[in-house]
Image (cartoon, rainbow, N blue to C red; front, side):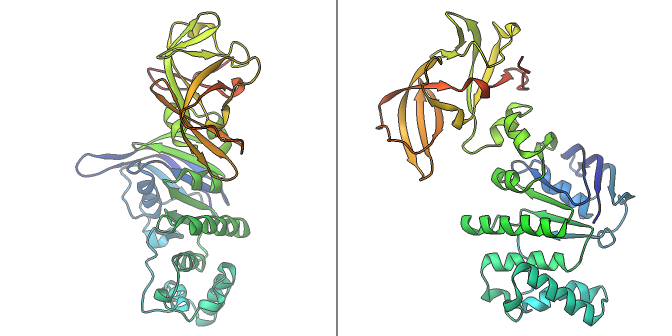
Length: 362
């Protein structure tokens, strides 16, 4: 396996569109890094530049310590798995797995051994004689992974490989990929727009927006300390609740909005210099809870109750603001009732209302 280093990588198309702006990060040997962001953020373009399928407009790219800006895709020692399976429909699983090796002139005995090893790793041993049309979507995606696996590349590149699968298959294939990475100790770069895939698969995550890297960190650090409002809202399901208003001191701290929101005096790390300024206060659904003794409370109206078995989502209205709380299984409140809610002090997030950057608490 090999490391990958991007140093100020930039992609500008002929029409002047800037798809990627000064992307810099490294992928350590054996690491699984996920690129995540909404459609059009530049994540697939970065992956295609690493693969050599897109020309690099500026910056440098190293694979295994070697500069590869002008190296042809076939000579970069990478294997790519795409969103569509791209299997040859007239070939069996074994023939699909072997095809790339045959093109590269490997000996028949080596091809046979590699195909058998990949089939065993991915649970395809009983399917080697099947045609793709006789297989499920998950099985075909495993064949696509196997075709990359037999290559024994320095780097695996995966471009939204699970987006065509249903929810149950996506979960099982996430587990397959995580297990494959662990067993192979492989260097992998994985692109997705799905933040659940990013959080569960990535050892580190690169969050992108409009071609710019927003933040790079381990999953829980991104979740607990997002650097700006975009990262805070993008990661987490359901999304973080946001309250926007001016911070004032009125019989305690209050965020002046309609209606005003009482804030805790102690434990949140609020700075005196924030008084009089417009802020955005964020709180995750699991940190918005029914009132607890001694905490500032506010009344919210129950709009929709969503019991999902192991937890309950309470969709609430606070004035005209829709907010959501994640609760453990409890007696369900009736729609339209008013309940007292509070913010868990230790888990509040504060952002500057102008530049939307995170504010450091005391």
